[in-house]
Image 1 (cartoon, rainbow, N blue to C red):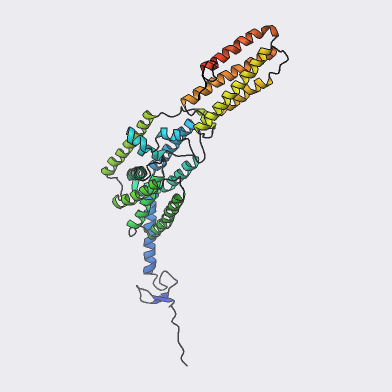
Image 2: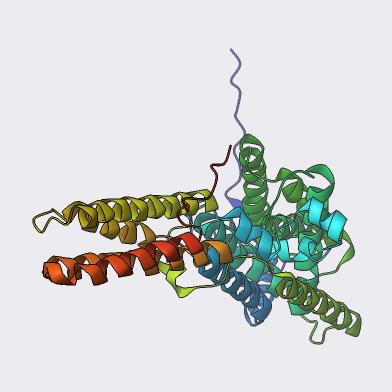
Length: 416
């Protein structure tokens, strides 16, 4: 019978300082107090990580916050121009503010749209998600690379996303910071691999564990949604990877930023400024109005339908009141004519300021319906001998409506 002895791991180690056996569970020698090699390495790694993170935390990140502020300011202007939707926005507003539109870029040479579209968002949810992501990844990148290089990385990856969308998704009218944000994710993932021997081990593995799943999930989500501009996402991501292989990060011991990065940062900021000025000078969208702050974003078709409903209400009120005046019946019920005028005014209350034409038509209808309502109220309190004046005012109001082209004159032919 053979008895086999199972080897067990020793619970002692040899102290490198005094050569005696000391328990493995202790980081120091039980006899001379010398620390183990492993414990010294762990301590050095912890100190390296502490110094690395302390240097990063001490850095400011003004440009990440500035870009979020610009996004918020532009979105507020979009809101003033055409209301706000949860997951959508008026296409006319987005285009006027500088969305990527291949036709306008090609025919009118509006190349600045490749930059301005990075700062536009389509609905509140789009704005919220992108800027939350920028709040997280943007601050980390700016602390790692410094403000100058962050501005360069953000604009170049965003521009790369716009160019990818222009090339591979030419029919889409797109906007959003997603291309630049994917670019920053690409920078972060490449940074963790490129400097894996230089970074604290736990920090590098933490970055890889967080960033790679986020990139994968967002790409899968994007390709499963038809409304997502995946060309911009992939273009920005690849640009971020390439830039991270070329642009060095700002090491903890690096105090001053090299002049070349300062010059490139200034150039990027100048490109942004020139693009915004060009967008401002080319703006042909709806007039900005504080009224739209209380409106949900509507399409021009919905606004036109409301205008048409108010026009029909005006015509109904005019026809009903003209019949009452023609009968000269003091006991006639003016309620239908009055109700139609009030319904028309209610229809106009919710019409947003989407264009000069819609705003003008709304103002004209409001004027006529208000006059019609007041005239009917005065008529109800008048005596029969004063009706002639009401008839004259009603005829003048109908003539004004014909001049505004809100109702058809008797001599105007029907449209086929």
